[in-house]
Image: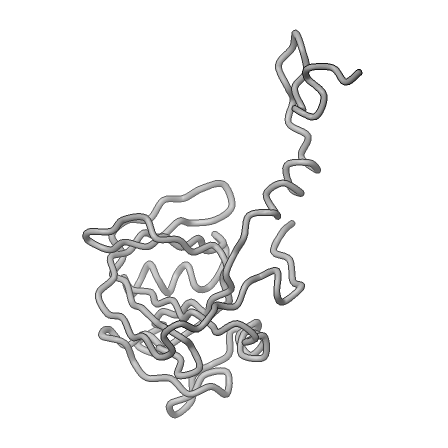
Length: 176
């Protein structure tokens, strides 16, 4: 007969110590989208691939993104005060790959992909199903990232009803 606590993961009579390997596996089960985040470096569009993006307020619409503390993008967002998020279509792995090495912008393209400027000049990818731009409202340092919270100031919907690229779909992992 199974005990009452079997399968609960609880240990009777003592507090639990975090098993970091188990915690890592558990957190990898959180579903993530895969996005191209952009900002401006000396008024020139810059991008990176990100997956920690979420809406945090309805009215006004606010979004939070997490950026590694030592990334160039952190400085770009801090100095420009703006960032954008490009939502890639399901199956858009090729587009995501074009931004893994943070390519430089050239005449109307970045990573070989066409873009148009958002309200503040951040790159809205024409391959994206949707793009939005945010004005930074707050930045919160966390142990190894900076959480930027921004108010949505511009948005474009290109492909209504289209699914979004997920981290799981790519087979990639974002972990240490």
